[in-house]
Image (cartoon, rainbow, N blue to C red; front, side):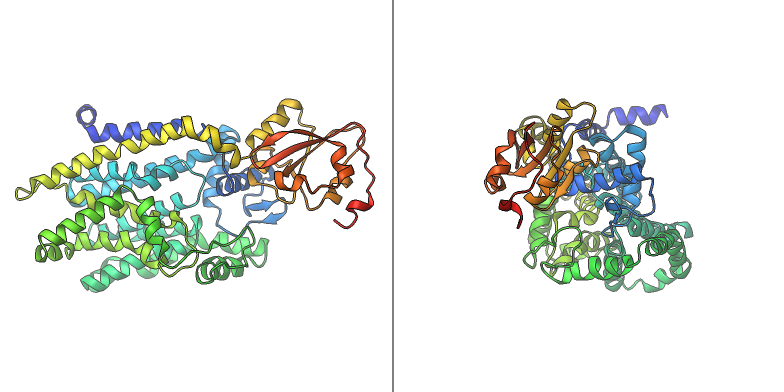
Length: 498
């Protein structure tokens, strides 16, 4: 143990990773949960803790959330139970999941290319843009990527004859993905494996070392019970989840069947642009390295890229973009499952090569330069986000109300649209109204009532209603209004039709 600690103390890559992850851990609670994604998933976990319903995630009280399986929500709910309902607890599971992805990436790199390459790969992965952000984001993608990374590591070890246990771990990883995000995890694993087997022709080895039938049964035993129980608890879940979320969402641009928001409409091929930004600086290093390799070596480059290991990593790294190229609904987070492979592929060029010593030096310099991103991220958190975050979160409006009423008896209503962050920070007390008519219905003479109305809609309120509302200030997109003591509860003709 003493020798290990001594080696780590003199390992610069270890310290780059430790400092980067420490910064990310320290910043987890330094900025509010933003709308729409982070606050939505955090609120679903908060409701799980509040209601005690751990089977069916809830979009609103009594309204099931069919969009994603619950494994990530379970982890956040446990974190809330342990550390309280706050930003730090909401983001902490993703930080630990990121550690797991790093460890798996390191182990695979060390097994195949040695410790030096493994450290470079872990450093490059840690400091890449998307990985670093998602290491502290309230999203489902980190947990799914942990599952796909486990499956890809286990498959490689099984195919190399390291034991039948690795073959079963392939399906454990798939079960994690199924419980984190759904069938897309199977696609993100199966697609690169299919291409690699197709190119290498190692089908016989595949049948010998991968327990396809018993492994599939293990996967179903781990994942299927929740799906069955969820359908029994809320009939219609399976149809919406498998047909809507995993077919129509990606095949129908602007899909209108989304129960929880609006489907994104993206031009075909946009996923590659998303990858360039999200995987930076890994994307830049991969493109540059492949370009130099093909330009200077040509035949040698084809031979290198045709190597089983390099081809495995290429199939793994590029499969997310290939799969979503023709999708009309993509997000930058969709490229996440391929990032561990991209880091391993770039790091593989760090291996000693007497004929090209400059390549090793270039990769080392690049890895050190990538460490600037965590510093940049910290500066953004400290100096930029405080100026703009009220545009993306209702925390400041809610905090103002809590200061006015520490006992929590204040009633708050949002007109037309209630942001998820308002639900989270009000602990589910912020309500939604659909019209000014409903505003009148909730007014009680002599008891202050607060309304949050988006600035453009304030002018459209009936004149007599506005006359009995005090402007308490603007918080980002919303103006906070409070009823005056003399504000009547009766309706007027001006808003009967609204």
